[in-house]
Image (cartoon, rainbow, N blue to C red; front, side, top):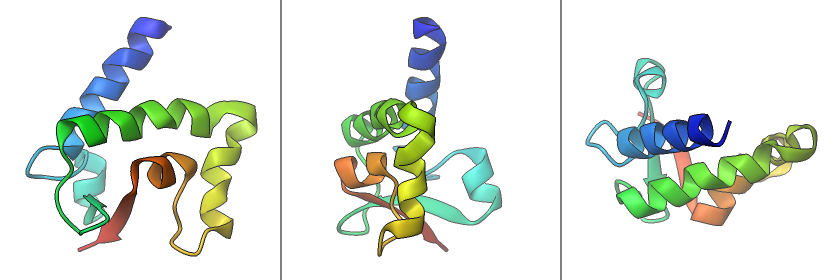
Length: 88
């Protein structure tokens, strides 16, 4: 399980720090991941964001449910990494 989680974290971090700024699914939905300045993520920032998804997913996914309550529609991992998902 640990190996699968690390592969997924690295996979998503690589896509989010690439010029596409997100996975293929995000690209199809015309979404990108940006930092607080609206810039492309560095690999380190993308890695930390995706590492934070483990915390967001614990305890019934409550960190993801924060999107409903948050003014900027951020999950916990986005708040932690200071990132946003924006529509192109």
